[in-house]
Amino acid sequence: MSSWILIVLAITGLVLLKFGADWFVRGSSSLAYKTGISQLAIGITVVAFGTSSPEMVVNILASVKDSPDIVMGNIIGSNVFNLFLILSIIGIIAPIKVQSGTAWKEIPFSLLAIIILAILANDTLLFNSKPSVLSRIDGIILMIFFLMFLFYVFRQLGKEKNVLPENNPRDQISGLKTFLLIMMGLAGLIAGGKLVLDNAVELAVRMGMSQKIIGLTIIAAGTSLPELATSIMAAIRKNTDIAVGNIIGSNIFNILLILSTSAIINPLQFSTKFNFDIIVLSAGTLVLLLSMYTGKKKEIDRWEAIVLLLAYIAYVIFMLNS
Image: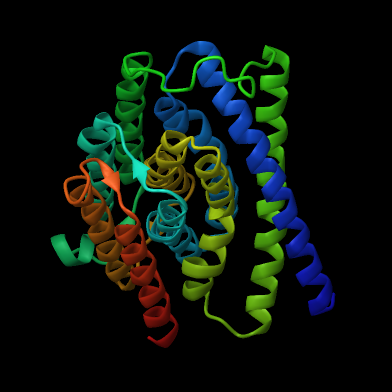
C-alpha cells in the first residue's frame, strides 16, 4: 500500500472522529440534561470510558502479542497527550472553569493512580528485584483502586448540580435519539481512531521509528484522538465540565482499568526508561492541581493553557532527540 493511500485513510479517520465527537458530546449532554446528573459526572464516566476504548483495544492486542513497551508507552503517552496537549487546546479555546469536586478529589485521584503505578512497576529501583514487572497481582491492585474510584463516582452522581442551561432546545431530544447519538458517536470515534492509528503507525514504521517512540507518540496520540475531538467539541459547545471530566476520567481509566487489564492478561516487563515519562506526567498533574488556585480560582486561564502546550512541545522534542 502506497504512502499516499495511508495518508488518505488517516484523513478519513479524522473526518470520522470529527462527526463521532460531535454526536457523542450531543448525546452525552442530552443524557445529563434528562437524568439531572452533572456534566462532570457524565464526562468522568460515560464519555471517559467511551473515548478510552481505543486505548483498551490497542493495549489488549499489544498485551496478547507480548509487546510491553507498546502497552506502557500507549498509556503513559496517552495520559501525557491528554493532560498537556488536549487540556491546553481547550483552555486556549476558552478558559476552563472547574467544579470544586474535581479540584479536590478527581485530580488528586489521578495523581494517586500515577504514584501507585510507579511503585508497583519499579521492582528493581525500589525493591532491588529483577526484572521490574507489572505482575498479575499488581494488575489486580490497580483494578481494586479502579473499583474504589467507580464507587466514589457513583456516590457523587446527582450530588452536584447539573449546570446545563434550562430549556436548551439542543438538549431536549428524545431518549431514542440520545441513545443513537451516543452509540453512533462512539462508533465514529473508535473507527476514526483506528483508521488514523493504523495508518499513522504504518507510516512511522516505514520511517524507522523505535517501538518506544511509536508507543509514546504515534500510538498514544492516535488512541487519544477521540479525547481530543470530544473535548474540543465539548469546549466549543461550552460544555467545559464534559471536556475536563473526559480528560481526568480518561487518565484514571487508562492507568487503573486499561493497564490493570493488560497486566492481568499478560504480566508486563517494565523498562525504567519510562520513569522519566511518569515524572513528566506526575509533574503535569500536580501543576494542573496547583493551577486551580492561581489566577482565577478553579479556572485554567489561557496563559496556563499556553504553558501546558509549550511544555508538551518541549517534551516531544526531547523524546525525539534522546
